[in-house]
Image (cartoon, rainbow, N blue to C red; front, side):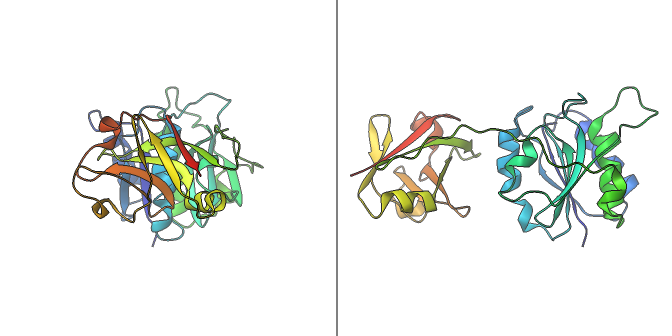
Length: 256
């Protein structure tokens, strides 16, 4: 089954989201359209990539994901469609597609700007027609000339150490839970079963639990979530405010 999803920074106040969905209903009638998120902070491709990376594989293979976050009509960032991990993606090549998977796209094409449009609304005028053609069964190669690669967004990396892991808060969900870029595999490889402490402002966590409910209400907890990444939370509380941690703050794990 073909499904089209939408991930944008349009918000819910203005007409932009409705205009794109209306264009999809006209251009691809009968195709299910699923909203992933329209509340990505404007232009924040890191947050958009986190959201999309953690859900796109739950959709049927062959689904088409329109990504309109930080979309620009600058020649520096062409509009593209690509095939990655069994899914199609359509959007601006501003670095977001390099953050969705460790694999490389097997096909990338550049989408042309409409010749008869002077003020282009990229999501409606470029992405929707491309998505509709893919939903109708057209091959991706028919959408435009082939490209060799996507623009690589460089992320800050912390060099590995024998007794310390330094990570970053990469996402804060609606519950105030703090999700980091420290993986369970990294924790096991460096920790090797040693005692540890996760440093917090004026406090620490010294145990990995399975879930929020493993601790009493109001207590801080750390566990590896379903994506295998370290999450720091407070049972029935907002860790982001109570622990005074923000996006991009450093999280340090020290092993004995």
